[in-house]
Amino acid sequence: MKSIKSRLTLVSMVVLAVFMVLTAVALERAVVKRALQAEEDGLQLLIYSLLAAVDRDRSGRSLTVSADRLFEPGLVTRNSGLYALLYDQRKQAIWRSQSITTDFPAIPKIEIGDWDFGIIQHQATPYFRLGFAIQWPDANDRLQRYDVVAWRNAVEYFEQLNRFRQTLWAWLIITTILLLLVMYLVTRWSLLPLKKIGLEVKAIEDQQQSGFEQDYPDEIAPLTENLNILLSREQYQRQRYRNAMDDLAHSLKTPLAVLTGLGDQQNLGRPQIDTLREQTERMNQIVSYQLQKATSVSDIRISKPVDLVAVLEKLLSALEKVYQEKAIQLDRRLPSQILIRMDEGDCLEVVGNLLDNAFKYGRRRINVGALVEDDKSTLLTIEDDGEGLAESEIEQILNRGTRLDEATEGQGIGLAVVADIVESYNIELEFSRAGLGGLEVSLRFQAA
Image 1 (tube, rainbow, N blue to C red):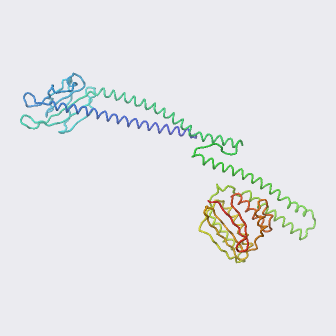
Image 2: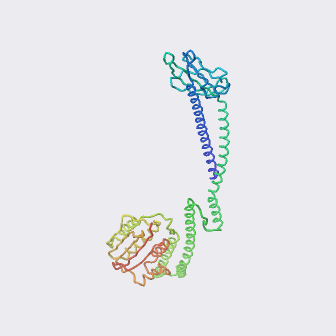
Image 3: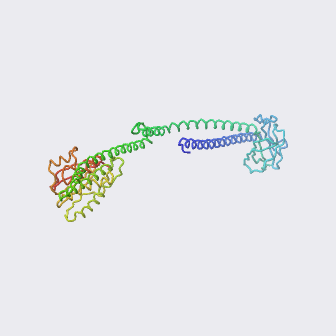
């Protein structure tokens, strides 16, 4: 069964049917138990009234029941359905109620003071029977055993019980059908948001809308919100690919024109060869830059947190080996861990380019510090003691309308990639004069 509605309906039917059957069985047993207890209590009251009417017979040697002290009319009405007998210790009936018109079997022996209640089938007729054993003093004040037995016709009881069962199961079936109908309607109403999602997906496929626009319950809203994020990122990424390809084609026009001009010359000298290498290297950088620009992650909300300190330690360890001959004095001011919401590859690209520039243009000292500020954002600073940049050059770098790869020789393609990545993550990037005399770069990351 691939339909959620069918599954929920089937499970609801099974659970509800089992629950209703168990409820009906439990209710029936409770009613039967209470009805039997009521019958037993009624026969006990009858026996107590008989004991109140017990008296000695004329000879004084045995007991009898005084008819003028019987207050139960059923005992003096023939075939009334209520009967009583008094037995002596030899199981001989010494008294019978006037309602008896047939012989009843004697009861088994019971202990003195005990009650014996049960349903007896006698001559194809069900009866309730209750026996009670007592001791009564005779004429010589010696205690003699006697059994008092009460019988009640149970035909009417079983007829009422059958009517109760029929009514109970009839209402049970009606209630179950009504509840199943209600549950089916509730299931359909509850699954309407999923149907709406399907319709919106179809509309997105048909390009009639760009995302999920309906309001959904709290359980489904996170799903549609995340899908909207993915759709938005996919559209943004697609646009980046288009822009990257346009930029790539535009950027390669000039190097290709130069190479075409050189190809028309028959004899290439050393200057032409150097120009050829320069243009080839430039084309390689342009291709790398555009590929990096097109594939960088652009949505911070779906990026897995990365440990900035671990990334810094990995890069610093590698760069110290690369620039070992410069004997850079490195001052680290880093905590044990800082988590930022950023793709690890983008983080390596941004921090790696900035650290590489610091090692490349620094003379002897580099300071690297990171801390979490009060607003939970992370501030990363990188300082070097190189020549730095003039104020006009810093302003030119910070100008969004300026291509960083054309701003300053030696700091082109790397900073261009950095600028594009930090802009996609809304990271604040700032260049300033460092306390060491060189350039200071500050990065402020959003809270993870």
